[in-house]
Each structure stands twice: as structure tokens, then as C-alpha cells.
Length: 457
Image (cartoon, rainbow, N blue to C red; front, side, top):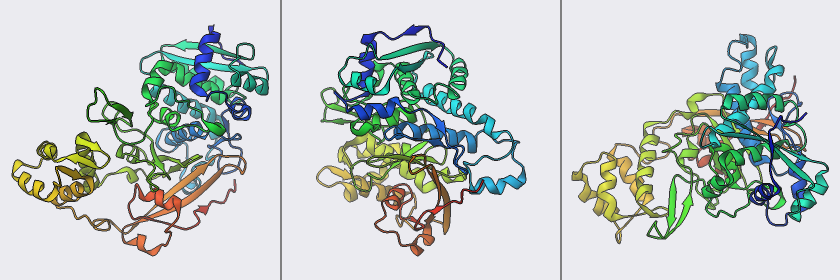
């Protein structure tokens, strides 16, 4: 079954789209991975609400879409009024399992809603594009893309709508048919790109010529960000930064903006942050819902909790977030701000001018201020101890980690994260996963082994 379309992309438009997607002369097998994969739901008992990824590479698309499926499932109305008390405990243990009669029939509808959410967030105006990529043979099409001779092998049909409700209806039909088959994922990615416009996506990125699909068919950070927040930003820190003292002549580095789009519903954490390869900002660390896409050097998975209170911010965290925002607004480099901006920074935090002299004496060193010193000083002004265990309850948080990669097969694991005094009882130093979680829950500990759930239906 095909998308009912009213136009076909010209060869020139198709070539521009391919050049944004793939590196120059990509490996044939890397392109084939994308041409062969669609959005298929898992048939593994206990993970029926999970997407199954049978080709390496598109995990940067699968994980964000899965995140919005989980959001609808746990915090939307999918199960509202349909799950009896007897199934409540079952859902707490296996949140991605089918529960109650009728859930199986609604899976594709919920998937379509997740896809529509991604598309809606990426579209700057009420002008949506849904397209279908069609090929006669994946290998021949991949070879054509490698040689930039794609007109005879690939056709992209396009449907344009003004209302997201119309797009949702098309996605609901497609989720059961062409979006689940070969080229389903690449069709959706192209839909997002064309809805945002190719020029708009290039404007989002630090380097406009950056391909979204890199070596081995992996998604880059720009594509993952586009799926999560609707902007193909190249970084995951908060806001925009400039290389050079003068923004008019410097090089722009774009991160995740919270001022224009608000708090994102889904967050992001990275195994690369503890290694100091990048910095994930508070915008991503503190989303509206307890759902985070997890990034590593070569894969994206999903972390989530069914407990919405996980996202409730303590007074200390709120002060830290405000202090970080104020500091970043005056920063000249990572973790460094000019002492000449200190009065303005204190005013923004509601700290009166009477504290300026003490602040200058304690914080200014050769006309600069370091973030670590500024953070500690601000917390003291608000009566907040800097001790990471102070004001933390002895508590544990139950999370789930979902990975749809097949092979080895979709998997759902339970993870207990311990904060406060409880964290001292667990030894997991050196664990990359635990180190990543500490970037969001400082000094936390994680139960070793991540308890794998029984998959009994």
C-alpha cells in the first residue's frame, strides 16, 4: 500500500535531500540499512509496546519515537479507564507489555501519534509534508545514492497538508502498511526534513554541510536532536554559544534552547559526558516527563520511569538551574565568565548589591569567575549546603531501560538508582552506565547487573 500523494520530488530536489542525509559516496551497506528498515512493533512478550530495530544505524530515530510512545502509554490516556486494579501491579513490573483487552489493536494508533508529535515539533509553520520513499531494489538504490545517480532507482512521493490532524490520519494508515515496511524509517525522516525545510535544517546546524547519517549508517547528534526537540542542533548544552568574543564575527555553536520551545517533554543523557567529550545542559537533564534517550558513542536507547515525581525539582536544583542560566548568559567559555558582569548576574538572581563586594572578593580571580565557585557561593547565599548528600532523602528510584536492537532482541531491564545515604551501600565505580546517570543524579549508585525482567506473557 502506498501514500496517496499529489506530487513527486524532482531529481534535483531528491539529490539535495540525499546530500543532506548521507556522507559523500557512502558505503552501500550503510545506505541499505536505512532502505530496508521500517517501524515494526516488537512481538517479544513483555515488550509489545516497544519498537523493534532489525538494522543497525537508525537507533537515533527509533529511541526518540519510542520515547513519545512511552509518554503516551504511561502519562497519556492510552490506558486511562481500561486497566483494572489487578493489572496495575503487572504494569508496574512490565510497563511495555500488553495489558487489558484491546491494547493490541491500539498499538499502531499510538505509534502514529508519536510520529505526529515528532513531525509537529519540527515544523515551524502549519505546513506539513508526509512522503514515501520507494525503491525497486535496495542494493541498486544504495549504489545509485553512492554514485549520486538516483533518478532511475528512487522515487519520493509527497503529500502536503495544513493540519496535523490530517497528517495523523495518514500516519495511522501508514503505520500498519508502508511505514512498517522497507523504507518506512527513511520515509519518515525525509518527511521531518521536508516539513522543517532542508534550508531550515541546515540553518540549525553548526556546519550546514554536515550529513545526518554518518559512517556505518549511524545517526549523528543533529538528527537525534531533530527527532527529540524539532531542531537539528549540533550540541546538547543549553542555549547558543559563540567561538570568539564578538558574536557578529564569531562562529555560532547551537545547543538546546528552552526559552522558545519551553521544557522538552523528553530528555537526553550521554555516556560521553562523564568522559568530558560533551556537556548535556539542564534543559535535556530536566524534561517534563521522566523519560530520557540515552546516547553512547554508537547507540541510542531509552531510560524511563513510571513515577512522574522523578521530575519534580527540589529548591536546590531550581536555584542551581537559575544560577547556571545566569552564568551561561555571561560566559565567555565553558565554565568561565567575566567578573565585570558579576553585578548584573547577582541582580538576575535577586541578590542585592550589598552582596557584590563579598562576591567580588571571593569569586573574582584575574577578572574571571569560575562556574564551580559561583555555584557554591550562590547556594550559600540561599542557605543551601554544597554537600551532595545533604538535603537528600535515603531513597531509591526505579527505572526501566529499553533497547529494541534485534539481534539480540528487544530487551527491557529494571534499574534501581539510589540517592542520598542509600547510595553509599552500592559499589559501581567504573561503570559507564552509572557514571552517565550521575550526571543527572550526582553521587547516585546503581544496582549492579540491571535486573532483567521475566518476559512471561
